[in-house]
Image 1 (tube, one colour):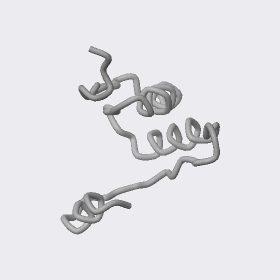
Image 2 (cartoon, one colour; image 1 turned 135 degrees about the horizontal axis):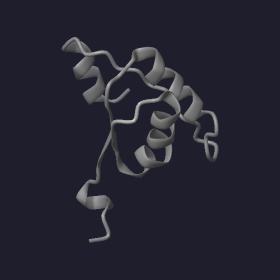
Image 3 (cartoon, one colour; image 1 turned 90 degrees about the vertical axis):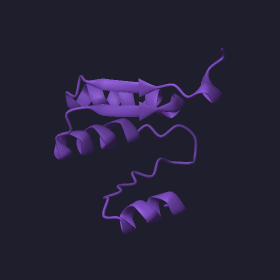
Length: 79
């Protein structure tokens, strides 16, 4: 975990890292993330960036969490 994550943990926040594979496309991440979303019973899934779309949207749909918010940061936009 990075320094920001460590600071958040120190402040009492819970951080869960699902650790996607660095060896090509991680085909297991959708299922692992969907299981996590189901287990934690989140009402809304908020995703950021292209990995959020690639992994977060399918996982949210698989978990039954239809309320998904996507934030596109300027550095990712072509405009």
